Length: 305
Length: 153
Image (cartoon, rainbow over all chains, first blue to last red; front, side, top):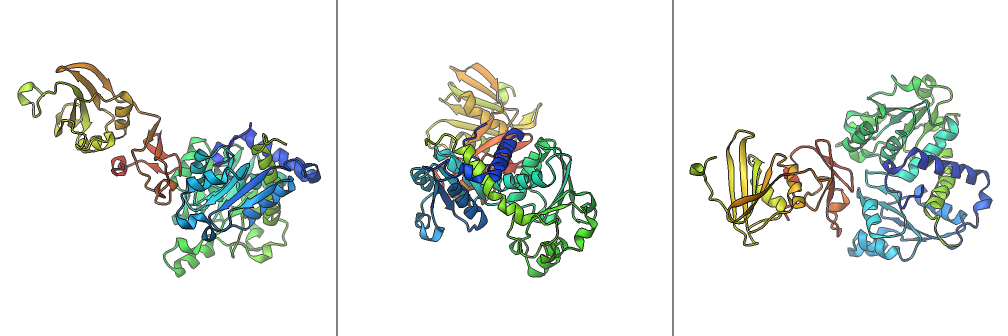
């Protein structure tokens, strides 16, 4: 089914997800077959917040489909600095591109943008809200490594503000997955995500420690706990230290556990994990290209050639 | 309440909103966007005894017949309210408030980081969820004290 926009993972059905992942696998198997498919297409990159991998991977994905990108540049050098509303910026950019990738510091920004334009909008992160294209590459990585059914996943770290966590948890409700959420009390899942999970009948459990649940996990998805979420440095250090993993931690996990991370990491995964077979986070980042190519193909399907 | 005890006289034409939860009358007017500047005759009675609610408020708006969609929004704060359309002192239509699917432009989102609080040219929109409302933009759910989030600007 073709979608007009990709705003939140809650809009994705199992069939939608599988269509994108299947297409991504086709692309992965023979990328050259796709190199000229969207030669006339232009993708607008509108990043109101810093980004490295999301922006670069959308840029690369569009170019590998034969298209080009146009980049708004940093907020400091744009008309936003002059006080332009997001709605106006989007209405202008709509005229320059066949689709818009938007990252914005406010929750709901992509939803708003989608109401003002006729070209597809892809939410590349809206504040502490959603990041659904990251979720698609997360799911692709899980499917390649473990499969997406009869799965136990542990999602650990900043569950309150982590937009990749929110989208992933929402999307996993389409599959037979037991979700374990591991975080300090102060960074538990927000009420809105919890509501969605309960509405969809998700199997979820919450923990404050990894130890008790690690042995049964097939996937451990680690996220960064940010310093600014805590009132003082000492409290941050004490809490963050509890949710850090290294090679020794993983000795208690399954040997075929997949350790994932949306990146960037700071020190929540020790470098000694990088060389273990469990480390999937760099592969996960690389999967951003075929998955975002597949997503663009889904959303740009009607662009005249 | 018998006529002898009437605290506010009957109106000739307009709308009487009865069985409003005690203390919510001013919020009712706020939701309806009535602040007196329209020149309409408005009477309110607050916290009078009610067999059904314990205490109730009554709001009377003269010379204006409120539509069903206008009053349905009141279900957020006054789910038991009854709406009486008055013509020439007689009740010509009596209805209850129905829960709408969405509420537009009435509430402000309590999430300061929601895009609707960022000066954008949009009205707020909330969908109705069990025991509350949910922002259609950022997903924030309001369960308690919905009246505190009525946008009075």
